[in-house]
Picture 1: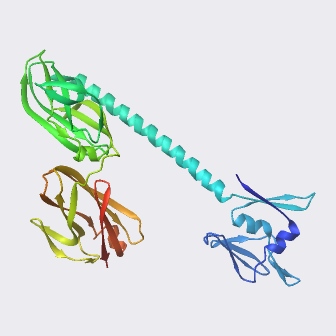
Picture 2: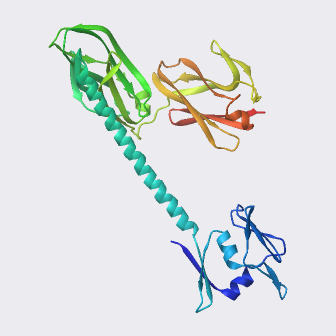
Length: 373
């Protein structure tokens, strides 16, 4: 709540003393009030204002107008003539922080509502696309765990990161004799396309019903299991979305395995045929980019996500880049690289020591430093 300060006028005037030609500053050192003894002209943050009475020196003390000073610092001033009392009302830090929290909560609610509406629009548009298709219609999409004698079983849309694998299936019904292309795509919780299965030039007769399924995608120790959240399956006929399904991956916190190790990490200007070129930790403003080159070795048969997080010289997060290793055999290695552009971009205008933090899935493994001069 607001902080209320009531002070007798004579005490407040004595308290608000400044030396001649001095500045009065707020606690954040951003609000500057300038006054001069005997001068009705005053300044708040460089803006000129006229006082009713100028600052004066009385009995060796400098007296300034209480209302001007208080309002200049963002307070509300009230006067009770009967009691000759000045009331100064200011927002406390707790009050302001609470206001910020409430506004942030309202913003989050609105963002979530917008997201819900966008998802609903997407679902409805996909249904429209499906009904408008004159070749073939999707009558259902599903996920399941097992396939025995070409029969689908253990249907579920909830998986744990320790489950062995996942199958995705789509049920189709022919509207007319037609030839079509079919895609079943899987997207991670951040809407990145992770896996796709394609069937081209499929030819079926009107009235026929067909079931299409993907191969088994591994979850445990692989990329899908590494990214918990709500995943999406999108079915496309001739590159137009006609089916949508969602499934959830939940991380099993009791299971921990080391998938890969970082065996090389450095900064350079170029990469040619898997070999870093112009290795350096110092880059100039007119250089095109900074490249972070890395090499990893698989400790088991696995898949994983490599993340590169860049931070500016002030320690502020700048950008994040990720690369997915969908499958890597045990004891094999792979190299990847990520980069940020310098010339013509923010790093050109912000020289100093930058940092890049490297992660395997969510595990931090290395920090590199480089200078932009």
